[in-house]
Image (cartoon, rainbow, N blue to C red; front, side, top):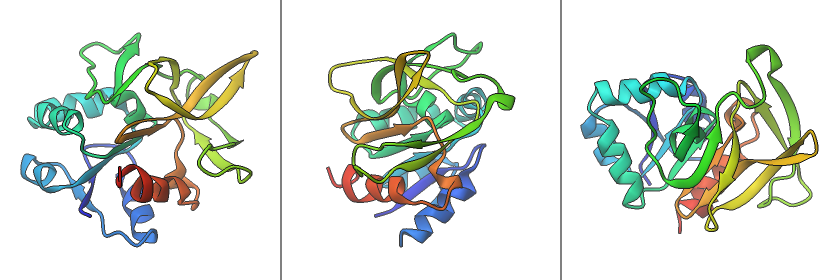
Length: 196
């Protein structure tokens, strides 16, 4: 499988390294030709507004949106989660999403950079074996459609907020598994989501 990591901005190198540790030779992609060649795509964490604007500036936005809509397996982490959402609550000016998951997300839901934190999550595909979630200016899912599967949640002030979801061939996490050395989320994407 030819897996691309969108390399416009953010921690794309860490995702590339995680793919390598899973035995997959991924490649960084940032042109129309490169994106047209991949079988699956990872949209990294970073700044969702910047990634959205750069995708438009390089004429990639419509292509990525279409490929996701056509069923290309896609994984978005943190900013990537925002970019695969159907709707953003309080988006930045000019910010759009590629779509892929029927959900509304709230940017910076847990607070600013200084409120970043780590937390052990129960991740549904790996029961009884928590995953360390690194949350950096992370979003959460405010609402989701009936076809969205919730894979992990966090309780905040007595309310549960999804932080890992899947709809068909699209996976999204509010956290950064690429920063922990635990590649189970990447393996789940490669071995389960991409095989659907």
